[in-house]
Image (cartoon, rainbow, N blue to C red; front, side):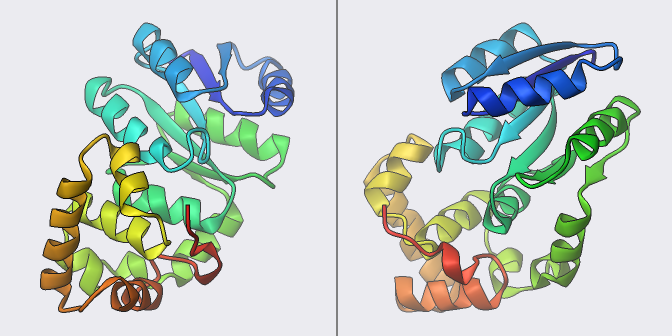
Length: 216
């Protein structure tokens, strides 16, 4: 685990991160700026620590990581979140995340996160820890979390954020027909009548931030 992949879309930011991490930590650093480059990098270094920008591939980022970690089980992940909604998306859809940072995290926090993972620990930036501690999703007994599969939860989150069915299908690489099958299964399991009721339930359950509802 002496290789770090900085998967950050902005090359100036990743260059700054690389400069911070090159300071005597004894590892090699690679920077990538797209999901395709990330796939290639992980194929070459399947035990790397990946610092992943939560918006690297927009809504396809979570699904891409899910597939990568299923294939390369030794990869370790630090999510570099642009918002708390991004943290929730990874928390709900990815079985294991080794570290959470925010875009506002300091260089020292980045260094501490990488060191923690190299030592076999996890790292959660203090603001993220406070947010997750206050979020009812951690209870794991909310109606959505308790009743839905991981894939259903992923689709429910995206619907509740206002993502169109066609966009969800593109991001998850499955058909719109399959997404609609998931929708109606979700409605049935949760006892809701449509997207609006689902969105209210998702917000109430802490799975969606109110200001993250959007149309793509």
